[in-house]
Length: 365
Length: 121
Image 1 (tube, each protein chain N blue to C red):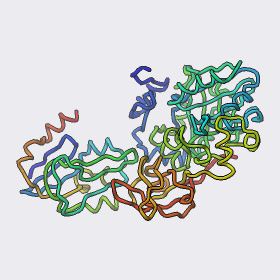
Image 2: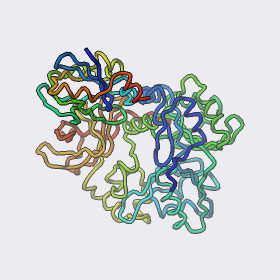
Image 3: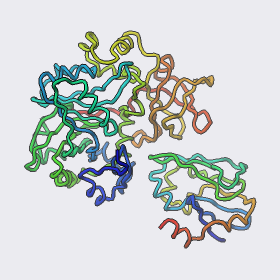
Image 4: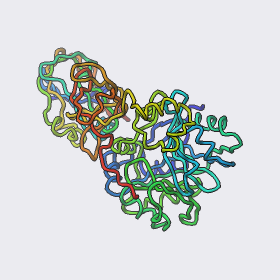
C-alpha cells in the first residue's frame, strides 16, 4: 500500500468549503468544516448534513444465485431479500467474530455492497475466494455521499422526486440532474436520510446542488462519529472486531429467523449457541455520571474494583449534551441501571449502564 | 507584567513570583469544541513537562503540560461549569491556573509573542 493518502473526487470541494483534512484509513478526508463538529452534529439532527463517504468500498456482485452464495459468508437472509431492498449484515469468521460490517442491496440483476474503507483490501479478496462463479467488481469511479437529517428528503427530493417514495432500507436507481445515481434510504447517523452513489465526473456538481439547499451543510468524520455513537451504531474496529461476536454486540436483530435455524455461515455454531444461551459479555450503552468523556480503552470496574470490561467507543454527545459511551461488560453487569466505575486517568468515575441508543431513531418506515 | 508562550501553546502572564497560565487562541482553535477540562487541585506541585490537566474536546483528549516548575494556587472554576469558555475567551476569562513559580529563571526558556507567532506560522 502506498503511504500517500488517496483523495476522493470531492477533495477540491472539501478544501473549498474549508474542510480540515486528515488521513483516515488511507484517505484524505474532512474531519470537520468551519462550523465545527458540535455544530455539524446539531445541524444533522435538526436539518440536514452532507457527508462524503466515497472512501467506503462499493462492490457489485454479478452472477447466478449471488445472494444465496453470499449467505455462506454472512448470517443475514439475502436470498429472500426483495429487489429494491437493502439489509445490514457482517462477514463472520470461523470463530464467530466479525470481519467487517456492510450493507447489501438487491439491485435486481446484481447485488450492490458497501463495505468499510479500512476493510476493502480484506473483503474483496475474501469474496473473490469464496463466491464461486460470481463476478466481484470493486467500483473505483463512483463517489458515495450521505445526506442525513430530518430535512434530507427535502434536500434530495428537490432534484430526485423518487427519493420521496423510498422508505427506510429501500434503494433504487434514479436521475439526479440528468445523471443516473443509485439512491438508498439509509445511513449511519440515526436520522432519516440517503446514501447516493454518483459517477465520479458528476459528483461535485450533484453534491453542490444538494449543498445549495438552505437546510443542507457539509459535515465531516468527527460529526459522523458522534452521530453514530449517540445512535448506538457500532464502529467496525472499535465496537465490533474479529474477537467480538454479533450476539455479544447485540446485533441479534440482523440475523433473520431462517439463518438462525439453518446456520450455514462462518462461526454459526458459536453464534447460534449464544443466541440460545446468551453471550458471556454484552455491548452496552454507558452514561458517565460526571462530565468527563470516557474514550475507547477506558477500563470498566464494578463497584468493588473488579475489572469487568472496557469502553470501545466514547466521547461527548452533542445532542445528549453530555458524555456517552459504549463498551463490553460481563453479562451479569449488563442490565440497564447497573452502576459501574470507569477508570479515567487512574480515577474511578461513576457511570450507569443504559440502552445502547442515546437518542431516538428517526427513520422513515 | 510580561506574557510568555510555550511550545505546548500555553500563555503565562507573570506578576512577581506568581503567574496565570492558559492556552492560546491558536491551541483552542486547533482543539475544536471543548467539552470538559480535568484540572489539578490547589496545592498540587509540578515540574516543567509534567501533565497538569487534560482538555477534552469533541474530537479528543489533550494533555496540558507544565511550562515551568511550580505549585497550583488556584484552578479556574469557570472551566468546570462552562468548558466552552476555553473556545470563546482562552486568553482572558478562561485562564486555567494561577501558580506560584519555583524558579522564575525558567521563564527565559519560553517565547515572547513575536516568537510564538513565528512558531505557529
